[in-house]
Amino acid sequence: MPKFFSFQSAPLRVMLSSALLGFSLNITPAFAGLSFSEALTAAEANAPELAGRRHAIVGAESARRAADSLPDPRLVLGLDNVPVDGPDRGSLDNDFMTMRRIGFMQDVPNSAKRQARADVATATADRTRAELAVERVMVRRDVALAWITRYYLERQLALFDELERENNLLTSTARAQISSGQGMPADSTMARQEVALLADRRDDLTRDVARAKAALVRFIGERANDALVGAPPALSVDAANLRAHLHNHPELAVYQPMAEQAAADTREAEASRRPDWGVELAYQQRGPEFSNMVSLQFSFDLPLFSGSRQDPRIAAKLQEEQRIASEREAMQRKHIEELDGLLADYTALSQKLARTRETLLPLAHEKVELMLASYRAGKTNLTQTLTARRESVETQLKAIALEAELATASAKLIYFYGENRQ
Image 1 (cartoon, rainbow, N blue to C red):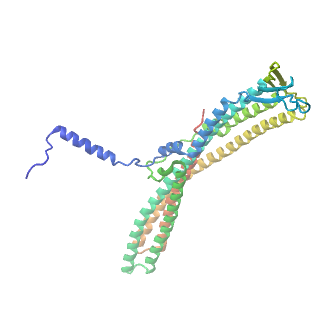
Image 2: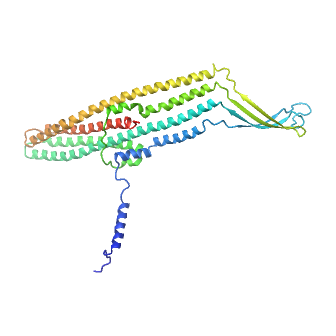
Image 3: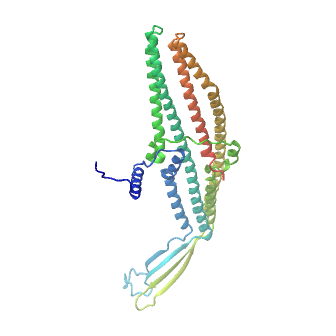
């Protein structure tokens, strides 16, 4: 048989190996799965809420640069002293007082007002950055909760796969018992009913998984439909540390630039008691027989009635400062309440999960094994056996649900209260 190919050449082997390696790399899917950390990273890159906040920061920084600028100058065009009667009526050249005027005017707010406006713009930019920090914390928390929820729901679905295999075995046992005369004909019906009930539970879980995926799609897009890989991180909750750094929470930190913005608004209102001024420079052209002229004039505001104009505005701004301080205090108390509640939940869930794993699950499993052995030996009926197994199923589902609740409580504590300890 003729040899069409020879693999004896080392360079040829290297070329073929490289080609095959390149082919294998090309057919590798872009994403092998969605891990917990990848979901958080994807959310920070793709969440529209964060993109919107970043655009707001750029806008606030642009506004800050122009905040203390002078108003645009105004061009002045006019006619002065045009006769309206007599022999020179309507003439622009015959009367020595008639002038064509061109000039410009510039309003100049007082320096305290301009500085206050710059401070307002700076505080607004700082507030926008603080609001981005708040949004980031909320997005990361919500993504963590959605990923954890989906993870534990899929674990419960995997448990139902195992239960279906057990159901098939139980159904076969029931038929064997009926054939040997040790079981009741209704046993076969009861086993099939149990299958239907488990199918209903599976459908509910499948629906809940779809909802969890939809929650992830909101933040990270189509990658939310990738299979989950890995497990949630083991989150260590330090209650004392969380309480000690509660005052640094982003939702509280945002009140600092809000207070600075309100104080700057107050200073701007107070600066309105001082007069602004303006300047006008104009060139006046008269008839060819007369000299042209130049005019320069200054104007000043006269805040003579501050009791009915400036003072009420100042009082309103001072009340706004008090409102912000009160809202910050209310927010801090709300966070203290929520943190204490979450810590209480975390403690109770930890204890319940430990008790379920150490006591309830082993007892439920032991009971099912004993009941199945008794049923096979004809010493008990199928109803009691199914009841024991149903209790075991509920205990296993409860254990997974408790794990999910504990992971959820941990994520709320860490990703809402524990990430900002600076």
